[in-house]
Image 1 (cartoon, rainbow, N blue to C red):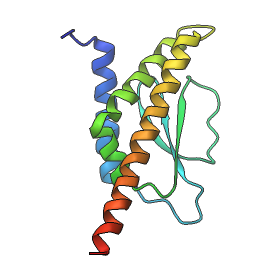
Image 2: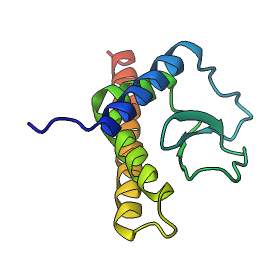
Image 3: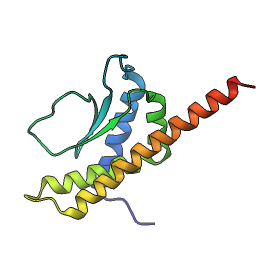
Image 4: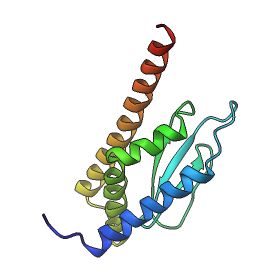
Length: 138
C-alpha cells in the first residue's frame, strides 16, 4: 500500500472536518428552497444554496443535490466511499489552481468523482425509501 501524500492527508482531514460540521449544524432545506449543493474547493467543502452565486477566487466544483435528499443520507454517502470522491475532486482542483489551463484529464477525473458521489447519495436515498416503504406495508 502506497503512503498518502501530505496533500491527500490534508484533503481527507478537510472532508472529515466538513462532515463533522455537516452532521452537527446542517439545517434541512425549506420546502420552498430549490435545494443545496456542496461547493468543493482545493482546501475545504461547504454547503451552499443552489441559487447562491460563487464568483471569483479559487476554482471549485459544485455538486448539486436534490432538496429531498436527507442530510443523513449525504453523510452516510461520505462514510461509504464518498470521502474518496470528494478528496479526488479537491486534489484535481488543487492541481488546476496552479495551471493557466486545466488539463482535460484533471477535469474529467473531477467530473467522474462528482458523478460517483451523486450516484452514491441517490442509491442510498433510493435504498432508504425502498426499505422505509416496504417496512410500512408488512
